[in-house]
Figure (cartoon, rainbow, N blue to C red):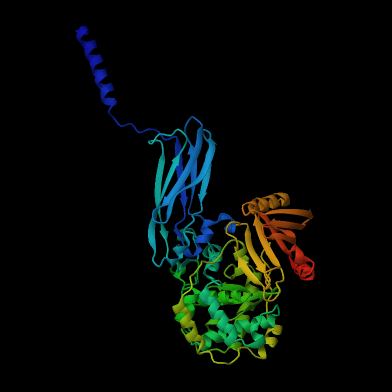
Length: 534
């Protein structure tokens, strides 16, 4: 019996092993991939999402955490992704070695084409990811995908925090800085409108914006007069959150300033971005004030803040059309309450200083010129007539009003001469150059560099490395936070002086200068501006 039993046992074991060879046992992954993703991407802010330095890298498409769960060191671990129809396969990062138990976190700042701002409908898109390494078999490659919402260009979300996680007003206004993406001073249509406004509403001296508050107020009320004379209609406050649980108002469609102009109507937030665009185009520093259920525009000058109630023109819930003086008076009354509330620390009262936010990498979209929209601007300008905006009340109102709001920490302050042009992100190949201010003769220039280091020598090395890509170089000397130097390029030598200022976790360098053959001639002006840099 035993002679039969053992051979049968061996046969049975052989059958089991044979069958086991056909069972598709899952191969244990050496890498584990976890994805933290954004719920949506707003095309209007596509440049912010693309810039790891904008707002200290707050806005991204996803962050991938890669863990080596295996027992061997992996060489050249590579993560790449694509968004079909928008972004081709793009390699994000290569890690030389990833040891057992080691992790790496890779953020994705997607670079969409500029035509993403022509997107007029929302859609759900897919992100595909692949993680591979040197020597990995096809079966080893880690593949994942997820979906996200790609909104239309007009959609604006006041917060990116999940509704169930909102705990206060700071969460409600989490995306406030991104409203600057809807302020479009470089839009050819807005520029054309501003030019007409200066010529036909603000005639003569009133059209020239100096660093005098009364001239700034005259310009602000001139914008109001332009909208009032065009019979622009205020279409309501809907969209601004009134409560922390006001989920219906967390997302809204915001018309672009060109659409407000040519459509001759706007919500309070849309009128605010329109005013901010025109003020910026004219060289003033625009501000948008947010309070529960409402937004209104104004500007900052010489440490003082001013405001106007742009909705006084007509429309929903209004008892009549306010004059420019009444609208300015109302705005200043609201501003005084705003200052009191903000000084008490009320988080419902907040503002967006557009140019300050621009310096942090939040810039507007590019928009194409449009002959049909220019024609509509001509039709609107024809309604304005020859009356000049403003009046004797302007000087008096400036003396009696105008608020001081504590400047944000590490904010840049400097005096810009009349007529100088502000350029945001003027050189795409040098993302560290966040702004330039250029004199009318195009010779004397202020340049602002924002760098993610607190070491001055390292900051200057970064600048020189960036210059080398453009066949430029520099020499400099530093004494404390004061710097002076020469920049060499194919077109000549640029002589400059500058200051190094703290900025968050990094450093801001502000320089002003001129070609070396003009420096002595312009030295008084250069020194005047230099001495105001704070």
